[in-house]
Image (tube, rainbow, N blue to C red; front, side, top):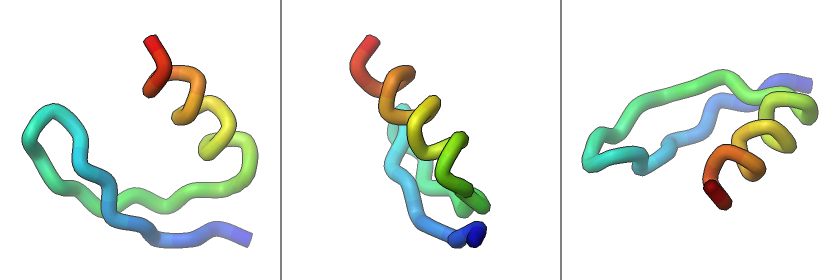
Length: 32
């Protein structure tokens, strides 16, 4: 199920709908 979560990214807060695949991909991008 998709969730709406608040992320702090590059000094900007934005709301995103995340599903499991996006969460996994987002974590990979975060580590770079």
